[in-house]
Length: 127
Image (tube, rainbow, N blue to C red; front, top):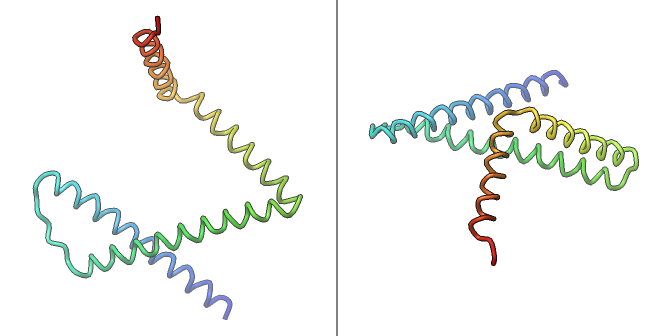
């Protein structure tokens, strides 16, 4: 019985991800064809698949966000969870800072922002 529940869960998640994939592909094709001026006639079954994939996507995001909310609430009440939660947040911030420092695009973008800020200071300097 337990294995059957696992199999059904994996089949349903595979179906959901497959429908999300179809929705993403169809959206890309539809947007590109609309940009090029080509009219595409969409089948009714594909419209239902698009809506069903949106529902699956919403449910997956809902479950993931609810899990994160419950984890953060657990970290408020239990000390061992709180320590792990704080360590996880600090570790994530360190990784993001390291990633930002190492990316060349980020460095160029930051130089552009600093340059723009300096130009604005010079142009709108109060006398």
